[in-house]
Image 1: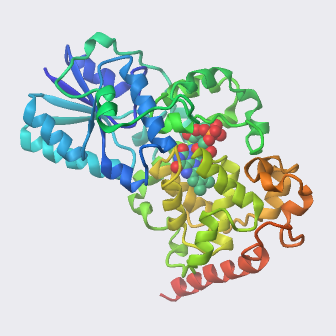
Image 2: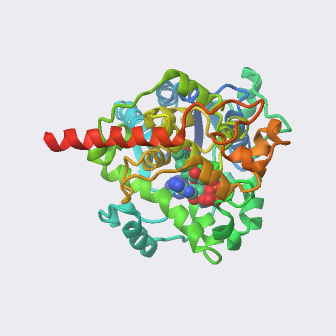
Length: 441
Ligand SMILES: Cc1cc2nc3c(=O)[nH]c(=O)nc-3n(C[C@H](O)[C@H](O)[C@H](O)COP(=O)(O)OP(=O)(O)OC[C@H]3O[C@@H](n4cnc5c(N)ncnc54)[C@H](O)[C@@H]3O)c2cc1C
């Protein structure tokens, strides 16, 4: 049997169930990854973007362990080319998890069908079998059920000589052809996870995870997102030390569970009473937010971290997302898109789910959560270490003044673009209007 393996977001040979299944069906497997210019465009990714370099780095590491071919083409055209040129009996790939991948895999399935080739999807990259989860609708119920279903048994590694070469480029060739480069100095290194997995202090996680000035979260999200590390490996490493950490892995699967149950949540609020809010979407406020010039230093620092590192600490993601939606009265979909264009750990389902949660339009059992950016900054960045790291021009200012820009104007810094308390009143009003109209109809 001649098998082609299609890598997407499972860039590893260790504990890769779909790859192992493919290798068990054939003596030799040809393996490809397709860099799709449409995906790069959709995520506004240039060739010198840390996210693109991270992807190349991950492909280079994978390619050093096996024969990996990399194509730079629209995915559909790449497969039409491959299926026209070689004879495969089947294509194996991991089951898609996001909407974007669902559509892509469906498209390639059609291409395969026309060529008489089977496309076989293997479920992986999850700790619990989604089909056994039933239909819990809040996280607490989900977590209880999910925890009992976790199966973190790892699956070994496919030996490198199981892979066969075909007449297609490898990453090296592609880099030469297109002038792509992986610079020695880079923020995210694709092999860093193995060190981090061992050295991260899971024991302290519950105490440190909310403080953005500390190195208190694992920073494994970019690796989990591209499947460079398997979630089972992460779970096995963490479970002895921190149930709180395991809970975070459960959040990841909770959002996939919601997506499976409510596929429309990509564009529509999960909470029917929060649909049709008349967002203000003020262009001036949106651009001040995107440029990190809101006058609320904790928000601006978050945007600066996002742009510089392509990653933000979770606490600050919550603060900026709440601020955009509830203080600036901007549609959460605009925030979701903005994160999509920057995050190195971008995951369509987690991003949509978390934006909905932050906007109080998702499945959060609390009616409306308000994050006061001043109180949040005081509590989670009490010495302004985080803010000053990303906004060095505030170094000499007193922390108390930095935290509360409404009460203390900061000389030489942007004036606050809105007043938190006034805006929250407006937000509540906007939401209550929807409630009224939905009860009338
Ligand atoms: C508005 C908003 C948008 C987000 N968008 C994304 C996204 O596109 N991609 C993404 O991976 N995460 C997203 N998150 C979730 C979370 O912020 C990141 O997963 C986390 O900050 C990654 O850092 P870490 O690996 O150090 O996390 P840790 O605290 O070390 O957690 C370990 C792992 O658990 C998972 N996890 C943690 N928190 C969450 C959560 N709230 N939801 C789902 N999974 C979680 C991640 O896989 C993470 O790597 C978003 C959160 C918010 C509030």
